[in-house]
Length: 441
Image 1 (cartoon, rainbow, N blue to C red):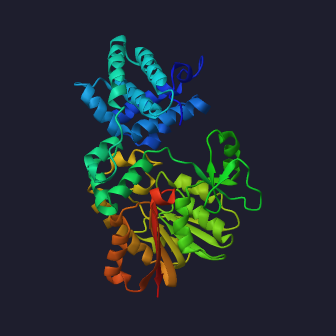
Image 2 (cartoon, rainbow, N blue to C red; image 1 turned 135 degrees about the horizontal axis):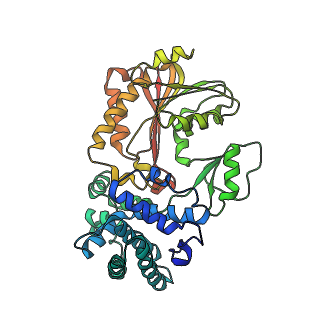
Image 3 (cartoon, rainbow, N blue to C red; image 1 turned 180 degrees about the vertical axis):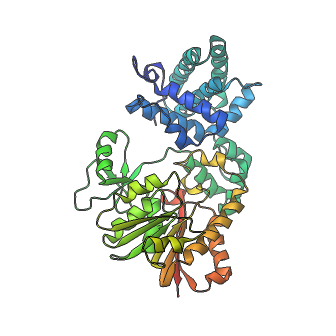
């Protein structure tokens, strides 16, 4: 567990920006505008580097991850919320208190958190607001000291939702789907900082000692403090940051050496790259909509070794065959992967703000789009070919039900479901995902 920052850590040194005030600025923006967290972090100043940058990101993700609990506690302490900059100070200090809970030095850390928050508020806001922060954060120590809800049926969905900072409707949906015990495990999983995993691509070279082996072949854990060693390996293409959950769809597709494989909805390209590394010879055709993510897809395709790559920018729901002809590519393929847009419920550890952006209606909207995309991809599968439909969702509405709807339609007639793979994060220990292998007769 990281130690919460206090004034000596957060100042960043003379002339250098500090991680703590930078985190407050980002949280203030997030509270006011609900910008996407990844886009917010991308706006951090270039001068914020090393430990200060890491600390800033840790604080920002921690606040968003625990936002529900912090908002409820602060709501009971403040009748009229202050302006966003001061509110952000309270949220950051509140996360530091949560983080310190249960440590031997918790009491001493709490005192430092109060003092540092007050001093920072004098600079970031005003002396009057610093007095408010002093009073509220002292009360927040007790407000956040409560124990977790009891195990079993004694804990209501509302209790679990507040303590583990998830929308109550989402907790209720998961309880109905997975049961109370599994849902609690899932909530606890989501509240932990994400482990950083990477795939070693230079298979002819020994794996560096600082990469920690995992249960999944080719995937390694990148422990904190190793970034200076990791960065050059990423630039050289020997290492690629990737969660083991992404392997499920590619393993199910089982692309073969010399095969031409179509990856639909390919951006940002992690699975396209994994397909290329798997087949070693052949061709990977990456298809996706023109847009902001194409640059990242191009960057990843450029890392492919030994295989041909082709990028087709087209909406697969419109005229994919015409676009394939223009690129002098096949109109059908023996192996097709479509990893569809989804709710991202399997990757909430990495995308802490997803749960606050989701709406109940998304679980009706997404499956309709996913089914349409599955139909479109199926038309590009050659006779005898195989199609993998995958998501990074754990929810049946976006997985089994979509596949069932496909088979209920005329388009599903030539296909048979051969196998399925699913990752429930609290069971597998990596991101959630689901993949279905369909074979065309």
